[in-house]
Amino acid sequence: MIRILFVCHGNICRSTMAEFIMKDIVHKQGLDDFFHIESSATHTDEIWNGVGSPVYPPARAKLREHGIGTPENELGVSEKRARLTSRNDYEKFDFIIGMDSANIRNLNNLFRVDPDKKVFKMLEFAGREGDVADPWYTGNFDATWRDCSDGCHGLFRQILTDPKFSEELAIEEWETAMAVNNDADDAHNSHNALHSDDTDDYWDDDDQGLIHDDFPRG
Image (cartoon, rainbow, N blue to C red; front, top):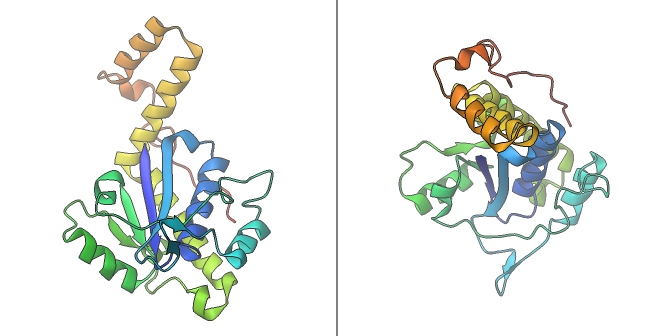
């Protein structure tokens, strides 16, 4: 399971858009069972008496414009509520991704240290510097969509081409298929074979079963 947390100031615009763009990418690849994706806030501005605000309506409208959060592809948009990032999140997630420099400072203050190098800024995955445009101030949800989409697609590509994660995905997908298609003994024997020295006979070294770059863009 690959666990991703997107973080912004209030968790109603940028980080929620990133959360659901990433969920959409993963869903279209049929990999929902291998990812856990959330978003959270660095401040409590949008959390009242312990209850978080829903996705900001213009952000939700922009997602829906791209086919996310519709009845056919809801992905949990309507149930999403803002929540505060906690120190325990560091142990729970593989990637903790802030939208801007202020988010990164807040995350560093919260976690104190980042020994496992889990904290990133979103646009690092888009191959450029800078912050994700904040539509709360700019009103430009198109720019925020582009930033989040570019970052999410870059992150997904990095995961698929990172041997650590691509091998994990390949093994999990293979084991799931074996559990469905074979009886318990066959699945057990296949599992042992997968982890034997003959693993390369199953996965081609060039693709490790999952490395590709044909996933749909928003």
